Length: 449
Ligand SMILES: [Zn+2]
Figure 1: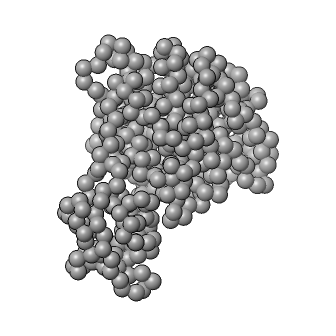
Figure 2: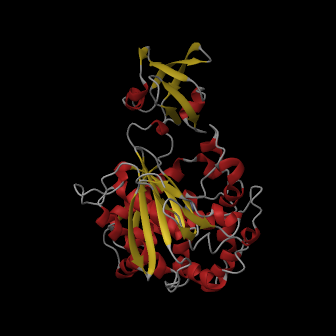
Figure 3: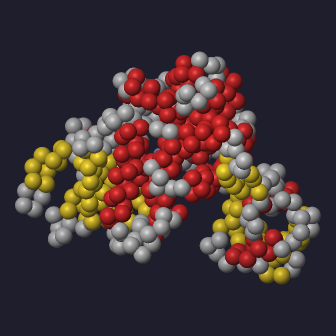
């Protein structure tokens, strides 16, 4: 091993030598399920349910390790308790690469590979929980939850994976959607977040889904099945054509959770669905309709229409009603100075805005703007990318403005009549004057375990 470098992995250690270590994998699948970090990293350890856990941080950072360790213990303990104290690994390792601006994660059976931005790690000078640190904790929570929910419980077809090709499944709404729902909800249930902080976070997911016009066209089941060919190969029309099984999957999980509570007189919840599946489907895996069958069994109620509408169809999720059931007000409004109000997205890296997508049905499309158009002026006055949203915001609705732009190097101009598209910015807040029953349901949803 070079200088101060060490090696971190959950691969089986066969032997340790003065300058090197030998690790062993049972087979190829085992090998690629155990990432290996070799670097000069920070490493800290903790135990949860007598199981050794560790995290490594590679890259420059000034993390408050004691705090991060304490918060991870709470999250890990929550997930272990959620699945009845069963721990599907003999050790767990979070491998974290710290960069200036980066984000991502990949789950494994005994570890996860995380990439985060330096500002997302907690430091002693910022003792309050903030959105950046919350994002990192949610990422850890998400990948850790996967140790149960995709690495152990998985689609039946994943029990005999062919690693030589893509493996298709329509169940990603279950494995990524439910995981995305619980990764944040667990931060509330462990009291790392207050209800208000949690609702602010969840509202961002609603905003993202509401902005996607693709939710009217692609069902969640299709979104899952087409992940290889569409979600991971997005083009400029993606916001009009596809929907994310992560974000909309999390919303379906929530609506399903509330529907189960409602139909079972608050005796069952989505938690019980996962627990029942955990107890019974580790060996066989899930068929495409297993969740539906378990939900029907637990509630003694027919959910066929529910899944036809919201999983296999593109009906709008009944979000407002679902939130009302637990005493939360869900409202959509326009956010000021957002280009999505007129239905475009832009690339801001250059001086002038280049349109990256045009949303269907919005006024920009009606005016004739295309992806790739470089916007140069409004009413004959030069406009830079950074000022475009505010400039358009300064006009009243129904105003007609002249947009000067380059298309394929040719200078053109067109008229755009400003009409706000449907409001997409979501706010969730605890409603006033709730009945005793609603308060009880809210508490059960917030903290039930
Ligand atoms: Zn995931």
